[in-house]
Length: 505
Ligand code: BES
Ligand code: MN
Ligand code: ZN
Image (cartoon, rainbow, N blue to C red):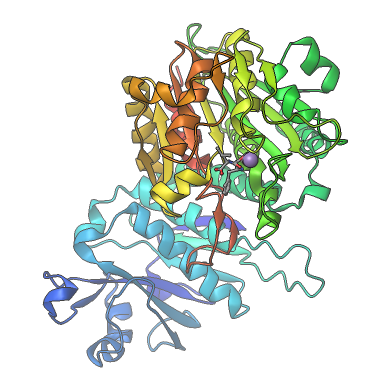
């Protein structure tokens, strides 16, 4: 999708469709049953005149994601005018705007429209959103909305928007770099979504390594991929314990970004869970819904996508991504409940449930990141069903061992407009992962399952400041939303890219 900025008067723009936001400026809550007060967020008198009748008719209320399409609007050069509702004016933010841009794309592309113009809302509350943030939100939202995962359908229509113009007030020049940067971020998010969408027969650990290498060559990153020999040689007993059960070779993928002028004392380590298919192993999962376990590599795909964005945005900070990729299979070679594995760090782990495999491979990934000299660690993983019980499909879980690092991440997360919620890591929870015969167990049972998994990882992050993102409930959209297709969401990528950029010297 081409993107450009324009400072033309909206009514004077020749475009297939002009998109304008409508907000509801009524004060009270819906529950108090006051009448909506729709307000067209465009100061161009010709646009306001063109929508006067449809607004006064009461057909347009400004309700979130309400869309109204007018053809040949009087007094406008645009062929069509699309009004998108943005909800209550007092609740409007860049995060809402991002979704509206996605909703506009999805509404228009379905109608075979290929290009459109989005007028940034510019009055009242919307004027409180800095122009930079607004441009960013619209570009990111539009790219996310433009993605559809119907790659393998033979009658795929491939309806996509080709060109987006954003109308801004005043000189567009200073907004150009925000637009380019957000394009990179959004394209990287869609790159990640493509990886996650692949089924396990088309995204084996070896294939994931190949995709990472290809991307690395394109953007100028170093990428190494190691197999079973190196994993055993590094004494990654926890990682190997999972990988040994599969005929498909595992891959340890390392992506390095080391720019000139980076601070000497900061080295960020990004660790991703890359289980390309999770059957559960000997503690096998029920058949119902097992097909979804192809997305158990979403954490890995996220970190690979983050590295793509970083390589193109060039912040001055050293970053290394470590991806542990393997299948989790039952077989004659598979590890069994009761087995004891010795992790790379030397800690012994009693395997209670072979389906708690993510924490095993991440244990060695985190340890390796520390060995490579990382000063701060972040991991992303579709780690537990328990996080879905706790936070549903809305928020991803954040765990942090260090409050300062958490603050940085929370700020980046807010900027990125992704929903995440912090969960605790109190020492009391350590009880749950005690073992009778080894240092720790890999499964602490049902209660507080997302937390005990995080406590397990903490044993391997040790004293290095660390953040763990459990994206099991958010990496896959169970249903389509107005702004995003059903399928891989690309969650956490934008927050992570923003977080990394925040360390730039
Ligand atoms: N990959 C799953 C977690 C998961 C669940 C991801 C639902 C996406 C959607 C993970 O490997 C797993 O199986 N976790 C177990 C842990 C348990 C055995 C302690 C779980 O959550 O049931
Ligand atoms: Mn599992
Ligand atoms: Zn898993």
